[in-house]
Length: 432
Image 1 (cartoon, helix red, strand yellow):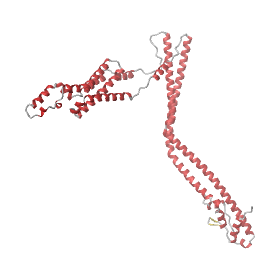
Image 2: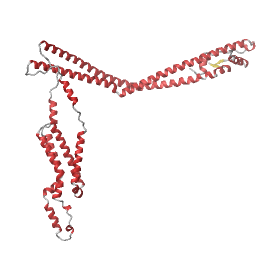
Image 3: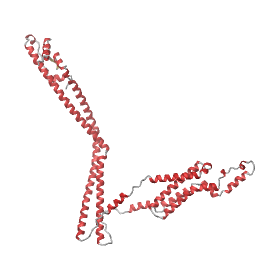
Image 4: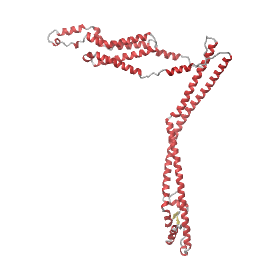
């Protein structure tokens, strides 16, 4: 199909005496050439140019941001690598020790077999492990809850039995001191009971009985004394309000009927708790208790050593089996230590959240920058194709222009066109 579009553009420029030229480094295109550039299909050139510039700016932002994260990441990674290297070195040492112990075990076994000594095949450590696993785990919250519930029950019972005296006689300060004293007694009772479970000494059982006695006194004594020896404020007789002179005598007789020890107890209902604290201080700090003695035993316990502990007395079979069992215990301890180190290495590789976040951040930024580079390359190839197509049409325009001009001797005399290069076309579209 014949296309005369470019021919008509060249003929029109010649008809109006239009020729492209260069002035002070600036190239001026003819209207026909400008119309070629303005075709709809070449509008994508400017769009591609804007897209490339936008992508390049985004890539520059990413490349400027990455150096802010990289030093922190390198520092964390170096610390992570040092810790991992330390654990791996420790693991290697344990494996070497395990190999040496295995060799010692095998040599001891061979030596005893040559001499007809039968060694035990059971490993006592496994039995201990089974027993340890089968023991139910103690829940730490059970004891505090038990103490609190016991305290609530006792306080509820005391309130019900002493409601008359609490309501009519006692002040808020006296009630508060009695409540606090009861709590102190119950707490000390549980502490001494715990010490009694640790040690079977008689002093702890006696102390438990003493605390139960003090708790019983605080529960029942106030109510009993309230009904046996009513307080004077509770006697409301009409004679008290009489205006005769016998009133003071009645009041005096009432006070005289109450023993002094009753008045003293009513003023010091917290005394059982005070005695309980004194007994606790004596039991805990004067009498040897399982807490302090346990610490002393730990402090004086002999340090572990790799040397084989041999029995002083015993026959050869006992000695051989003792060495055998000790070597197996040492191997079991090394295997346990090896497993713990391996677990630490695995946990260390996945537990550093900051390092993982920075690593993901940097990897995401690098991936995004690579994707932008690919998009830029793709758009640059597409842009280059458009520029080649324009260059081809400009070359076709030149051929048509020169052919038409060669048939007109008059216009040849003053029309001396200069033809654009690819740089001039790029400059026209503002492409560097």
